[in-house]
Length: 241
Image (cartoon, rainbow, N blue to C red; front, top):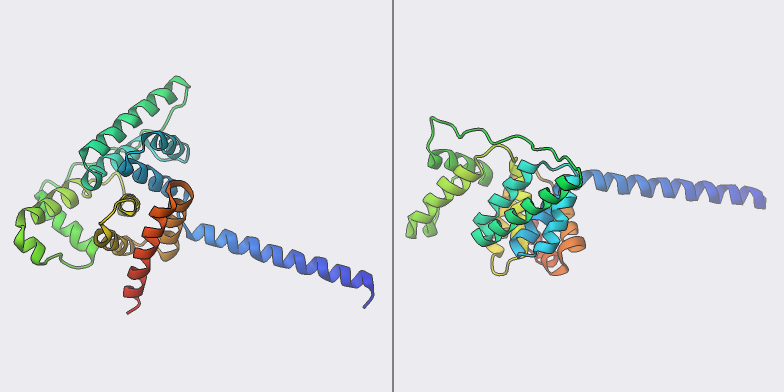
């Protein structure tokens, strides 16, 4: 084959390889978190960490990505169950400031839907028990709840009933927020592991979980990403057996 033919073959090879690489990257991207979900990660993580300057940036980016005002409010409210009232309240106050600044700049953000009332024919504990069982894949029992039955009532009635029972934020979004928040806390690996499993039960995929960790590494911190990677590894290993 002459030199010209070799050049043509080389160009074809490079083109095919480049196309395959781009296609693979696009496939991986489509399998990961979408833009709205990626911003849930940062909003939850910075709220839980109490990093208000970075939270402000994350809130603006979340609104720009299409998260509604009520979706973000719901994330910030839910964070009190994992990071405490002070961090949640600070996050909500920061969000109020962000919205005020955006309104002054003429930006009109979508309000989004309000949560529907909880079912009138069920108590919070009844609803929460159903939600918790659905998310965990089985009824949640154990010596901890026998020893401290009040915490069992609070988890079922308040966390899974009053909070997770609100329908203006889907379960996948709630689990993404919870995982992102717990990844930055020390000493809560058991809870993080449980919520990785719950996340899978909501239909989140391994690719989406790894995408969540990639967002932590890129925008939150390598320590948080490493912690999440280690715990996710244990979860994946357990689910294979």
